[in-house]
Amino acid sequence: MIDKQKQFRNTLWYLVPVIVGNAIPILTLPVFTRLLSVEDYGIYALSLVYAIFINGISNFGLSVGYERNFFENKNDLQRAGLLYATLVFIIGTYLFSAALTFIFRKPLSNLVIGSPKYGQILFIAYCATGMTALKTYFLTYFKNTGNAKLFVWYTIDENLTTVLFSWVMIRYFGMGVAGLLWGQLLASAIVFLLLSIRFLRKLPFHIDFTLLKSSLKLSLPLTPRIFFGVIGNQFDKYMIGLLNTVGGVGIYNLGQKVANVTFTFMTAIQNVFTPQVYSKMFNEGESGGLSIGRYLTPFLYVSVAGGLVLSLFAEELIIILTPVSYHGAINIVTLFSLLYVTYFFGKQPQLIYAKKTGITSLLTLLSISLNIVINIPFIYLWGVEGAAWGSLVAGIISGSIAFRVSQKYFRIVWEYPKLLLILGSFFVFALLSLALLKLQISYELRLIAKIGFLLIFALIGYRLKIVSRENILLIKQSFTKANPINS
Image (cartoon, rainbow, N blue to C red; front, side, top):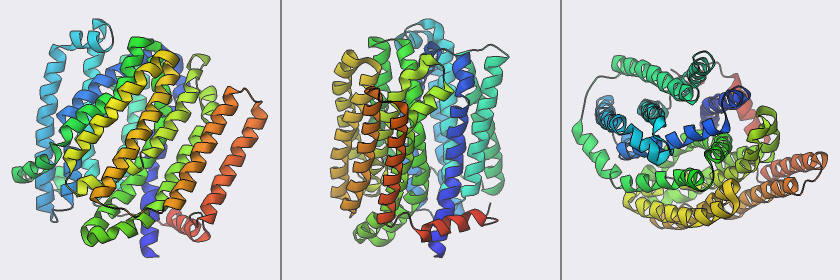
């Protein structure tokens, strides 16, 4: 009972920044979508395509190597040596790439966005994205040590500050789309500074390049995966900009941004189960596959539940929060919610545990190849929505292949009948809701159908004993705890 209570408390605490972090941008859509045009959002999205790509390469996959090797180093001195050595290395690559970006900002802007006049925006986007990546190593330390409370508060502080700074810069300084990026950069820089001061006071400054070298050996094979992975994730936006319009990129990006609630919700759940999965792998070895499979089923159900709610009510959300020019994002939200839920299986660290990171690069290369091959004709024929359908189809195919390969190196004994019921009902309900909208069935009937879908899904959870009195009681007890996790 105690372990379950702690698990639920951790889950709830990790959900707090997810709820706040996604609620704030969505609730502020009525403000920003009336201050910025769909073309502005397109420029913003394309600048992030470059920023995410370069920062992904510059990190050399160390976020994965750092998290894995954290558990192999037990004392504070070793963990400090790993943390500070990783940060010094990443800061160096960050500054080097920033200098190159600044020097070549105009030709890069012309290549990525279609005009050299957005060079400054491209540079700010890189700096903001890189600063956000730097602070994640501190947050990973909190997560791996079970300090969910600090993880929550630093994340919330950054989210609130980002929105506040962005609004001030757009509303009062007339900075336009650049204000969004400046807000993110300043907020991330402030949080990174505060975290640096805190860690330097609490954790002895010690750099262990031997541990960094060990992490790099594990992470470097991931660099091609990151290279191709970022291309795969951002290629659709770039192709929309080439084959469609910059405004189309804005619509697409907004739909992805709203659907990202599903992805970040799942990431919060992952923050709870990943340390436990690693622990079972290291402590139980191959025999831990059975207990891991049973352990993960409720997390899958909760992840799917979040995706189902968002996909069913994407229409209401977009119509209420945005002007008519943005309503083309409704179907994008539903399709990406479906895609992101399938990522649950890709979040399992089987290949990382088995030190088969080279294979992940091959799988990512396969994924991007499928994404390109499928997306080009889909975008050409059906535009923005075609890109979402293409990403979903490519994601399901590549995800299925990656699942089989991962199972080969560490076999998780999944509860397949339960998994098929949970995922199958989700896809049926979400696609039926999309079909009813396209057929222009009256809103009253569609609303009744959506509520019915949710009730059926809740009943499925009850029959699978995931939605139970015991679990509800544990959640209630978790809420009433005065101090869930020591700071």
